[in-house]
Picture 1: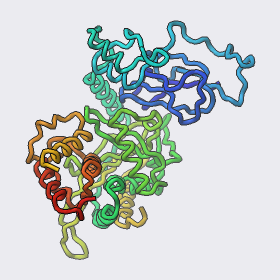
Picture 2 (picture 1 turned 90 degrees about the vertical axis):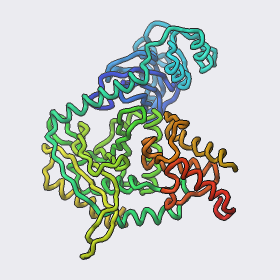
Picture 3 (picture 1 turned 30 degrees about the vertical axis):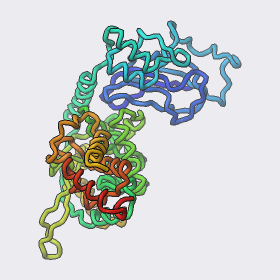
Picture 4 (picture 1 turned 30 degrees about the horizontal axis):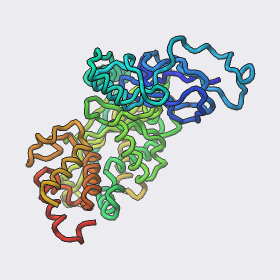
Amino acid sequence: MSEFRMPSLGADMAAGTLLEWLKQPGDKVARGDLIAEVDTDKGVIQVEAFTTGTLERILVEPGQKVPVGTVMALIRDDAVPAPGGASPGAVPAPPSGPPPQRVSPLARRRAQDLGVDLAMIRGTGADGAVTVADVERSGQGGVAPAAAPSVEDSAARMRSAIGAAMARSKREIPHYYLSNTIDLGPAMAWLAEQNQSRPVTDRLVAAAVLLKAVALALRDFPELNAWWVEDRAVRQPSINLGVAVSLRQGGLIAPAIEAVDQLSVQELMRRLTDLVARAKGGALRASELSSGTVTVTSLGDRGVDTVLGVIYPPQVALVGFGRIAERPWVVQGAVLPRPVVTVSLSADHRVTDGHRGALFLDRIDQLLREHGAL
Amino acid sequence: MTREEIRAAVLHALGEVAPEADLEALRPDVPFREQLDLDSMDVLNFVIGLDQALKVAIPESDYPRIGTLSGCVAYLEGRLGAGSSFVR
């Protein structure tokens, strides 16, 4: 029997509130299937199963807030017969009380918008599920506002979580910072040529090229692709780039794309588009918020030249990009206008020093100049 | 397609990338990026939205011409009225 626990989405997360079970007892689940929706300081997150089997018992009700690590459900390994034959009697008894309330995600969001307490609603949908219409009827009836957090509360909680993580980072990590300004002429020319022949839905943005260059450079500097765990750096086997995404309602989140060095720029663009859309739409998965090995942030669209970021623990490095702008640039003795960008590295001095950091930035420069390697 | 219909299509595409924005309050000659805090992914999604709604393929080199509401509507009017060779 495997235990399905409230995941930790970072060292700054202490607890989460179960919003909805996406699977019911008796349902088959495969590793990677989404089985629960959880509200955290980082927003609403979908949590995947990390094992394959049958959902045996649910131990936490929707609406319950539980600490990270709490067992929320039990998943039976189908290769192992249930204890006592078909009877699941050996597993802990389910919590007492009424059966879990079934609420569609849309109805739950509508309830939040209207400030309606879902516990006060009797559902009229399939199996008693609460529908949007039920919520709206209840809202018109003047039901007392629910305790569900408002948008302002959610933003405040996220700000608090960011503050806690960044304060811990600055307190514990001896940062050093380096930057390098890079001629993006070859890469931008390649990008323009690619986009000229692509349908609009397949066009690339510069961020995809920059992410790929960072990932390939990390192959040569594995000490930067590491987590600081129990007073030592542990190199990570996969290059998973956390992509910092500013949310329109305020706040910041950095979900990861896995194994970026192994993706084509086209595939990376597809995943980036999907990830950003889900980050802004509140549909990220737990694994995406806990698997990042290096975070990449770009504030170029906001006009800044250089980003000196704060490392996201337990990571040991962060790469920042400023805006891509035309500047006078010396090329073979002549001053020419070139698109350039400043790439910066924030790194943990417990793990690397400036010499290695400088070589890493130089490798990014080289990859972008010889963009064929991307 | 009338100018008003084009304007409505532009506002709809903007609303898809900036759902919280008060689009009726948009100043017609101030860049979208300044008013709506758009990044390059938002701009691409806006162009995709226009492409799908109006069946007009907008090349990257024309992005500067669709950066404001008035500029965008004028550009699309020209494209839609310029003959079928420009329209998908």
